[in-house]
Image (cartoon, rainbow, N blue to C red; front, side):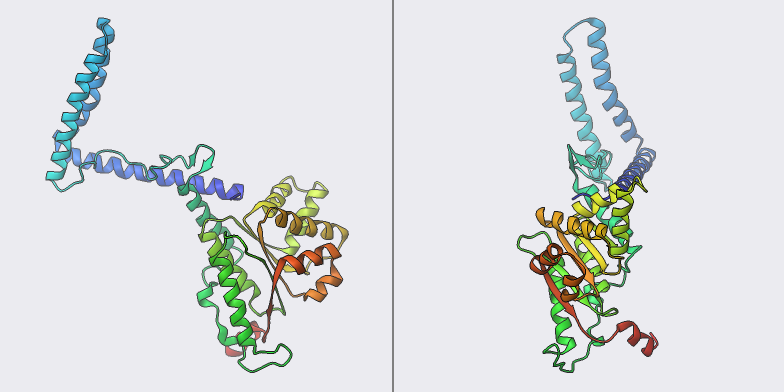
Length: 331
């Protein structure tokens, strides 16, 4: 799950902040208990002192330290037992004065060897959603808030059904894509239709669900994506290569508004690289566009059209412009 570097850094900082807050809360609790029950502080002092004194005595006398250490361990066990009894008698957990990390799997390091721990991955997911929310209205755009009332129930002979029934199908497919993300056999999605019919809304709903599952998600417009490929090719931005790496390796890439970019040989090459690389590595992609599949065939190379036509499930959006309907309703 290759999260963006800025996401990992922000999530790591959040983990450090949470750990510091957790330690501070433990220290406050410990000092409060010491004030209320001085014997607890004395016990904790003795727990440190017995082992230290046994080791120092053995070293100074030049004798085998093991017998002294064994006696110290036995004394400490008795002290720990006394401490536990004292705490429970006053209504506290027996381990209230034993520091426990937030994450017992990694001891709050965030990594287990070379593998990212679940605690850091969860924070990466939250940070990723925060970043996505700056581009998409993830607070309001979800499957639960997708309003089908904007789509007519009247039969449309040109599509062989009503816009409402067609969009119910589209909603079901998008929901299943997000809900089952990560399982084998899933298709990529190509969302096509006129502007203002909900393509970006459902893209945002997918991004939200997949992010909450802990997968890395990148959302960007076609104009921005191809600008980054151009910046990398001509050396205009040293960070462009990192952005392209994210486009190619994230678990889910959402490419918005394909066809809005200026067409050029560089765009053709970049789009083919993006689509083909992600297909080869079985990484899922959602593409939205105002272009139809026929338009795709005319605008892009045969190789691109073939992959979009053969490896993507097309979802056709029909209806009347929702933005216009909202204006008319005064919303």
